[in-house]
Length: 539
Image (cartoon, rainbow, N blue to C red; front, side, top):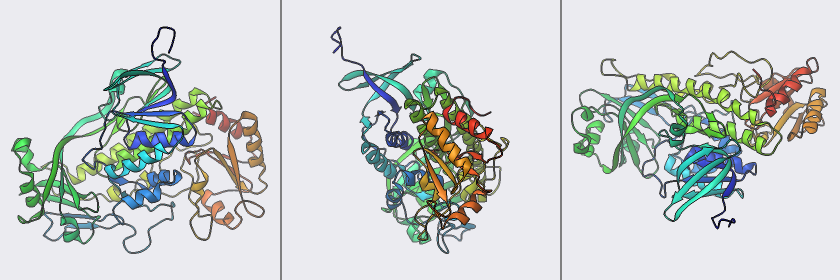
């Protein structure tokens, strides 16, 4: 109690608003850095709807870093998904797209996780993330708490939080607002958005039926339907192994009948093409398909993430994955600033790096939406190959400006359906297996600190370590070749990273290449450490 006999103000390093997959992932990442973190969530129960379900290769790599990949995979549907396009579920398919591992081993040439998405619905993913966050000593999650005001004073953020027992004020050094597409924090800050707020008013109908397994022989199949005589354009999507299924899209009936008067059981049977199909209706609700990106990701000590800064059509499953990768980018930067070895200016690189990725991913999701849903006058629906096979979008995105140093590519985007790793500055560092059993990857070396990769005896690597010591920057040095940490993997590593001589590669905690160093250009090291610590961000 203070001298006015009022409750003492609670203090934390980071307050996260929202305990969805993005907010929870941020909490786990910050917890791994030992950052005192409070998560507040207004909900007290999980959503009955599965919502997002596609977990991408890059997001699985983040979960691998957190030790959660196997648990997520165990909660998911088996195997990679198949996609089938037809007029109904009883007639021949017009098009079929199989997963990359359907006819053999899963492709792990580009990363330790399969390129296929993992189908883990949000209502199955969230409990895994809650448990992992609560296991972190420095993380607290409080459900049933509502944020009423957020005020940035310049030196801290004052947040008023209420529940049934009253309210409490929390002083946070930083706030991450992961409070959804209708973000009250973004609105209060006056941050606008660019894009289309309402591409379509769609429906999500959750039901239980063995239709996918029985009609396709694969519980992980997605059935895309295009039938102007019955349902219109919708997707019947698998949810979990208990035969929960969701019908997504805008059925034609919604243009003719008020939502509350629609017989969804009949609509589902019409879509399937069998009036006797077993259907247990569980829930039906509308939602807005949007495509927009916030005009700013940061206001002072308040950072926005996930749906609060971008919304994308669900075709391709990009939005949740982009959000989790947002916080993978910002967590190490916040930890660096809070621990004192980086300047707060480093946080400005969050928007510089992540907003172009969101804009790129949003544009691709809209293309997928148009090809599969389209408009009534656009003719038959079709599959874009990039809708399902997109390693360039998933793991090939790069940061051309921000906390990087050295030559980068122009801001012209990157290929979607292909990816050739090069270890270029700003790129996600390439995957190489470090052991014969193929259980340890170069990606497993990253996550906690600056990583210096080089051949044994590399002078640029030694100098990078020496300068990092002087600046108080946490790092670890990993060497390849004779007398190094990894001898047998030297040739594969050097080829994948395109290493010349004693060149050293600096990799950030989020796995992106900070800089490439050689003996001929010592100035790059200074630029790299300045950019990495926010003392000067690379242009």
